[in-house]
Length: 140
Image (cartoon, rainbow, N blue to C red; front, top):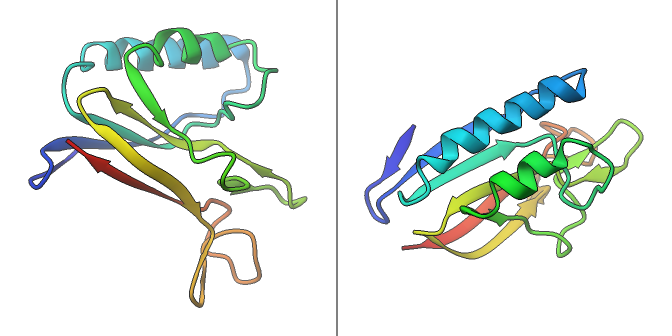
């Protein structure tokens, strides 16, 4: 956990497991929603690979995310301005990287950055990862 002294918020980075069963995934999202509900009034940013594309209507466990986390937190999801955050081996992009931001913080903007100058983070020859960088501009 990190605290930004200029804005005064806590930052938590995580990767939601890609579980092989819907029940395990639902359990993880319930745990995360419960954990975040206790922190809803604090200035908090939870950012990372959520293994969930908000535009994908298929996951049966998506309700754990939409019904339990979203009421207390904003989601910093740059789409549709950017194609996606993660590129598969077949070249298909998805938006599985985003941030949950407590309502004590204002999200000014968010974007995915796949390339910057000579650096290729995702989606090109010599890429550093299959994930783009998620950039947030926030204020108190």
